[in-house]
Picture: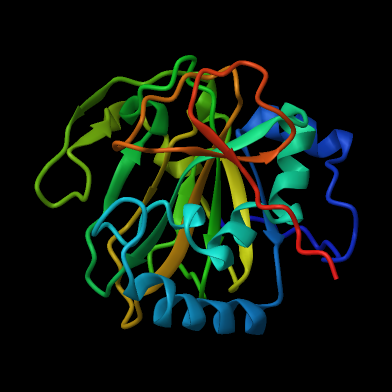
Length: 257
């Protein structure tokens, strides 16, 4: 089943409606939403490929990870009002980004098995919301994400995955209602958000194009997030850190004319 698309003006206030809040708690996700126009995102994607992804970042040679900490173009996406404004409606004003990564799935790229993200993390408590942003066209053939609405309300056991899968663990398939899956087909510049427990996966890329996207992980200052590498810092994208559990940095002050 294909996901419905919210028809939001990109210049409008990004506060969530009461209906959207209820839907997120019922279904575990929201979207798709537009962050920018498709042509603008395609141009930005090309610029990041020529610049950001050709030089090392804060995580050494892992050029696809954590680039919001050293690249202004990525940081602007992570802190974009279209995403942050909606997350503030869910979790309040104090938000941090603890991870971002580019995810390029080449033609023939492996299937990502059905899973719940919290199974793979050591967040304490396990509170997270992910923004999945399309950098180019994302179709069913190029392995769009599939979600199962409401599946975040039950913690599923995870078992060892086969070598044909991209991950080494997967949800126990006998407990995954695959017939309820929703396809998140996206235009460039569109995104959706989902919580840490919703069941999701993507099939192998059956198209002739590489599927390009960014995944951005957000949490709250009261959550302890073990460092991913020496010197790992979390970016405060809005509000304040009143807990001091993690090493955080703030957004740069805007330049004054």
